[in-house]
Length: 261
Ligand SMILES: C[S@@+](CC[C@H](N)C(=O)[O-])C[C@H]1O[C@@H](n2cnc3c(N)ncnc32)[C@H](O)[C@@H]1O
Image 1 (cartoon, helix red, strand yellow):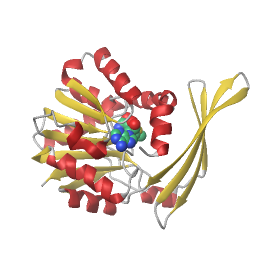
Image 2: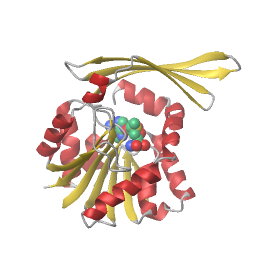
Image 3: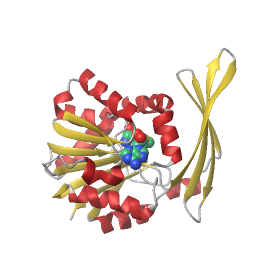
């Protein structure tokens, strides 16, 4: 496992879990948008695979809407929390969460017998690995899906945003934690290097907790469409938001909808 993935999602899962939890509040709206898109393809139920599922927000809400979901994530802490959340939302019988590396998707899911109708990859859960490994993830997802299955790459960073609105530093607070973010972006390689420094608030003082550096490859729409096509997915639409199907522009996130061919 890459060092930064181990540090951010496994060793400091306690901190990243706070960021994952923050996203739950906006997930029902996101899922409703996804259901609208699926409805336009005549899909209102079936089997859904949530790649890099975090603590399960998409899987849990899609299960609440009638889907049978399988979520895969590399972090044991997130998988444990996803199971807890499924119980709280009373969808344990419709959800399954598996700890594992999506690069070994078919091996991890060898006991899953039914093919998937829907695949989800949400919140910039791509760009972590070399291109051929990323291609292989989507090829495996295709092999595990029905013909005509729908793939969502949802709420993902993209190159146009960084060419227009690059901010080298930012500050955010979550619970009693402060996260300072330092970034550099190389448009030639589309590589984003980020350092997150975590501090805990003690009155007016900040106590340093930990630091993590990570590197992401940022996709352009065109590059992502090409990658998906090679993996057996034909892009049929793209939006700036799945919540309201707003058109994509450089300041929105990237949301791609593709069909298994
Ligand atoms: C930005 S989070 C997104 C989580 C989730 N998709 C969501 O929208 O809430 C990225 C997730 O990818 C997971 N991840 C990173 N590398 C992975 C890998 N090789 N296999 C499976 N999961 C991975 C992390 O543990 C983390 O939960």
